[in-house]
Length: 212
Image 1: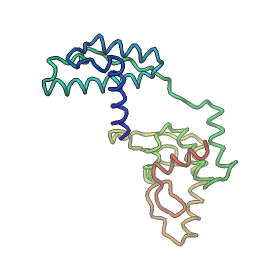
Image 2: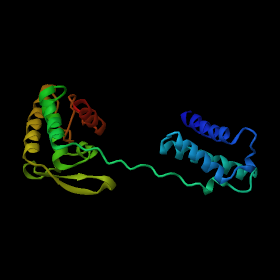
Image 3: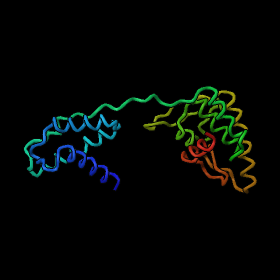
Image 4: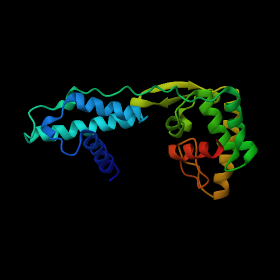
């Protein structure tokens, strides 16, 4: 529904610009460019202007298909370039503050959450890769592990000392938790929730958001 409304508004803007009495057969590429210029002068976002162009192209393609017009003038109109934004990244002090947040805030499961944050930072893994990490994926001393990334390609990642210490503290807590629950610890995934089931990627993202 929102898309239908947005495209309808785009076509109405073209109609208002050209005048209600203007026939579709008389619209040129220059007319469309002039309308785009007006939108630009109104400080419309590049993404909004490109959506306008897409709506107008589709409208004229429809008119061409049913032979209301002989040529589609919108095909001569190019989309505008979208501004490129540098990715947002954390500074060293910001990362340190985030990794210390579970210890300071005590929101959820301190040792687990600290291990998640330290391991993400140490290895450069994606959240989905950490979520799918299994105990059997580690090599001696938790110094490295094999993770499966995009395209189901495996690679080896490494964990520095702080991350390894946090992981060992979490695994000790994990063992106690399963004993308290009276359940056998047969979950192959590394990170679990407090019910003893594997922690999904969306769960890890939620945890990060809570401490951010």
